Image 1 (tube, rainbow, N blue to C red):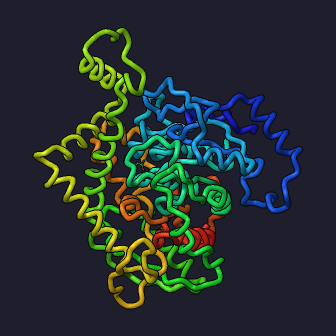
Image 2: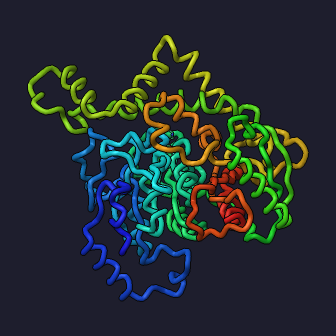
Image 3: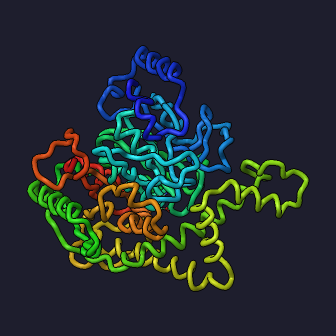
Length: 475
Ligand code: GLN
């Protein structure tokens, strides 16, 4: 609690709960006697948890960091928030993000960027869940909810030396989560260690009849209930297509070190190819804006959104244009234009349809290398050799860049940061980013955060527990 608000210059929160109310809830939680089951390192009972501001809560506004929703006060809690409260968690505030989740550096927020300060220098906190990552990294909360459409939980985790987990698509409820690109959107979790992330995941991993994309119980029952518990040796795939020439030397060193660490623990390493990976980023940046342009059409000042001032009684088309022009930031406007273009009659065949085909190829790439079949598919491809259990690759090609370097860069430059995170998103697979130091013998507690890279473990659909268990062996 002492840390909550202490780092206000980092702008991690858009709205923080009233301090007295947090104290009262902490006191009440300390008095109630939880079952012994609840009193463990993983349980969110009595813990401070921050919520990304594109997830609805009834107690504080929900802005999605957008001018157009700056006045929104949700009448209800999102299912994931309700579940956390039921598990005894204490929600402390709403964290900063790139407007509607669109961005990789948290620079596109109506409320100003959330950032990191290292060695006196301002660096990117990553996006779009940058505020959640900074809140966790500075100990302002025990864990935080984010959303991950193309890497928005994993990238900030990699930049801030925290753990970020994107579960399999459809496991956690999206009811009450403001949509960016529905077919990719997931709720993700950030924490200082894998155990806290797992504890939050356990509290949220349930079917929600209110979310039409929530995985139904019949399919859930076919998923593995547990990971290896660290007891089983795994076949770890090393995707050679991720070894790109622009990979930062420190990140490559941390990748090698992670592989050596896991090999020393008895796991075996296998190189694999995921050839469609090189097209994944382009496909993502066609599909995500297309879905976004459709999702954001409702913010017109009449159905939803803050209406442009003094514009009553004018024709609707003028009202819409003014409201949307004033309410949306430049990156969101760019995505709406991109999406509207790629869905238009003249472009849909060459862009949207092609991108969907690439998405299918990316999904097949993963199914081609995993030993276990994808539980969502009825027919399975032939796996070359025996197949691997998980994949290990970097989360991002570089460490957290300096803000001075990013400002003024072309938008495409920011899109490049997502090159390693979007493939798992396109395929709906579970993926976690854990911090690994490039040098041996550096303890997790050391302050020199600069040489920590995010390493990403990706599993087959539904192998969330396998991914979490292996992450515990790395961090
Ligand atoms: N940076 C990516 C984008 O801007 C991913 C964002 C996200 O996962 N919400 O679309």
